[in-house]
Length: 107
Image (cartoon, rainbow, N blue to C red):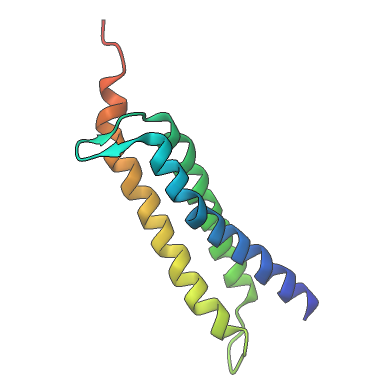
């Protein structure tokens, strides 16, 4: 049981840390109506956040047991938040991609 508690705390930390850091990253990137003014905060944050979410989902799958399980009450909402954060990070990469491509010198 102690192992599942440690996995749960690690999964919660890996899930919630990118959610906490998204607003400072948006402020550092100076997001506006036309996208980010600075691309590097997004390109540093988003892949790292997506990696953290994948690790958290993997840990939650390791914690899952079929049948009646009180830990399932924590796994389901945490997994949903993790998937939503993963999608948000992917969306931020897509929004920053045009600004990133415009900074590459072609000649």
